[in-house]
Amino acid sequence: MQAWIDNFKSEFDTNFIQENRWQDLLKGLGNTLTITFFALLIGIVIGVIIAMVRSTYDKTQSNARPSLRRKLFGVANGLCKVYLTVLRGTPVVVQLLIFFFVIMASSRNGVLVASIAFGLNSGAYVAEIIRGGIMSIDNGQFEAGRSLGFNYLQTMQHIIIPQTVKNVLPSLMNEFIALLKETSVAGYVAVTDLTKAGNIIRGRTFSPFMPLIAVALVYLAMVMFFSWLEGILERRLRNSDH
Image 1 (cartoon, one colour):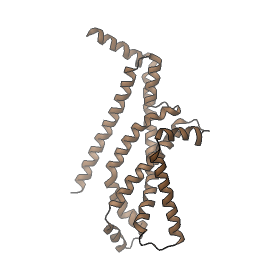
Image 2 (cartoon, rainbow, N blue to C red):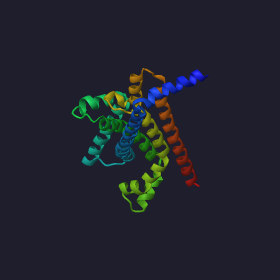
Image 3 (tube, rainbow, N blue to C red):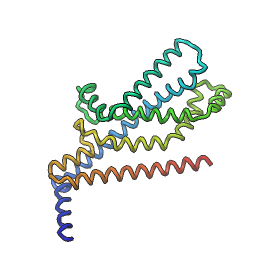
Image 4 (tube, one colour):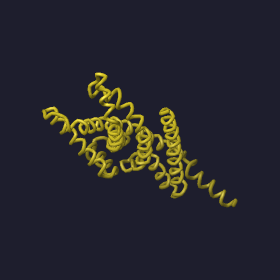
């Protein structure tokens, strides 16, 4: 037992204390959280816009009059469908590599490129989450808005969107947690995220167990923390219904 404890202390010192290697993990954690945060913001903005376009088209196509405006709206809806199909149908790693080596090849800011790539990918999933929330709202809510003198956009802003946000917040939290874990592939474009930092330590110490387990435990702790916040959010939403 004492030999195991001594070996553990030696491994811990080699992997984290010597040369302040723990700072590599801390820097990687910072990059991971930065990428996740900005990617989520980008994803929410894109998701809301696409969800508005698609849900509006679906709800109005049956009784809309043929017009140039209607045709342009149909084109916008078609472009949104193409975006969703491409972004949801291709691996996020491939998208990340395309952005870094093709679309934004002149940039060497890996954190920026990764944030944009993950944000665009997340936007496709957020769009469907929000669209589902909008489509789940009873049509009577739209009629109530019109009876109050609101036009379609005002009805969406004052009546539909607040209810939708309340309904989809737990799903958005799940998307945030999934996005947090997906950023572990950011090392493919030379970003020193949490996973890459652990791999760097492993390459320097030739000791794979401790740095990789440490990375896994940090991810687990973050996911448990955000899952705990999600649980609190869901309970408050349920309580607000009574």
